Length: 261
Image: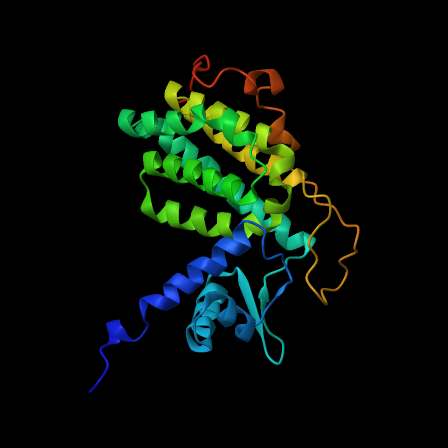
């Protein structure tokens, strides 16, 4: 009997890909770590075939690298590539926040406020998996308000590609992350699209700054072991409110700024 195209890949492959992806995003599998099919199939209790298909799917998304004779591993990045990823993600996160402020869906904003109101407790967590999950919930809720499916998918892809870089250091700035989330929400509530965008961009660059050493890809030429990533965006930071403004209560809306037309 001929197999229908829609049955060519069993749902099991998607479940395996999701399980491996989550382990990468929460830092359980580090950049550069080998992903051995036999070991993964034993851990997940499945055969090697769906594991192989899942790894190929993750490679297409950029979170896994597959090389001849070496097999699969968690993707690593040179300092230059990290900088490029962060620049693009910051730009798109800013657009996402601006759209959220302009479209201003009250029902979805209430949901976002509820997530942020739990930020103080979330920031106390020492569980990287929980921190990662809560961070995803915030960004997905913000994307829901922005209501642009194309942008949502692009930002989600970039977030997943940068998560392994930031995840090992998420606990170091958990409190700052949620203060910055709260500031973005206040700007969205106030309908200040310019401020929301600037705060969202700053949030990405601030997260990048805590990475002590660039994650150098194996064999990449010119990548020194002590390279550090310094985002070249001082001009953006200079236009943003200082730490005192970011530390304000989540429920307080920022003063509206005049918009240039």
